[in-house]
Length: 365
Image 1 (spheres, rainbow, N blue to C red):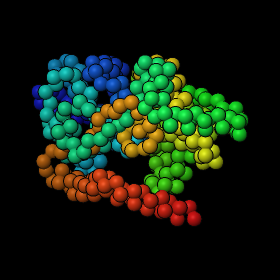
Image 2 (image 1 turned 180 degrees about the vertical axis):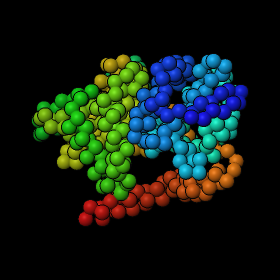
Image 3 (image 1 turned 90 degrees about the horizontal axis):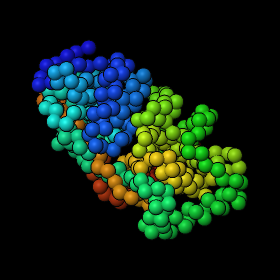
Image 4 (image 1 turned 60 degrees about the vertical axis):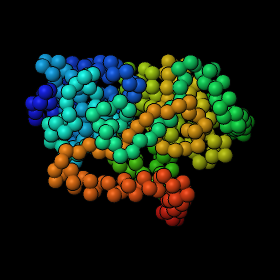
């Protein structure tokens, strides 16, 4: 589509135009980077987004005849760019060969972008991290030493949480029927049920319903059928008497399970089925060779109880000076600063959450 000559050559293509040689080079560069094998950073995720987001693009970077990097993004009006799948992608950035000399401004110019926005930029993205406006923790569960060691560590870190969750699972079995867990369920009907639960949860808590956006629903359905070593959809389900009571849909590579959309049937809320599900998921992931579960950015009590550590992610924009960058700043930065002001003040954040919940109840009524 377009080509720009700097120290490197940049060719911009649609995700579907990546050939298999380029996709394999992307995977190899990703492995050599030493970063966690997050499935959101694989070409399969970008290709899936490209099928539902017409503005998706990939900058293919060469040094001489060597494939040296890939930069997936979405392009909007006025040259405003955003991370591929922004709003649902939990790991973002470019995939570069070590030592690639390509300034951010030149890359943006080659892509005809005035700005590139991110909200889950992974650590180690030296080209973009200096532009970040905020740094956050993405909690993780290390299960690399196996399910038994994870459970032993959880008993030590969060003994009350472990005892309470185990007791609720036993009570669920006694009162609702036999409890069964499936790590990789293939039934599309259960995926539809999960999406319905999640939509109801968004509305109940006063938040924007992501599944009301058709592109997100289509993306999840497409990824549910994706089966590649670097990026596969995984639907995990907790059943009671053969009935789904909690479910989670995420993406996995060989070594990382990126947790994405968890939800449960509110009828069974007293048993905390979502917590039971996460404990079962951690054990099953360890047994299947996964070493880490990435719980994703955002505060939650269950994350604090389960996590063994955290990764750093960043939010912000990389900009190229000009009128387009100024328009981007005016459209995004005041909101970002107001959101950060509330988030950094627990009492104010709690009030905001209660207001959202009340708004959700009013909508239902």
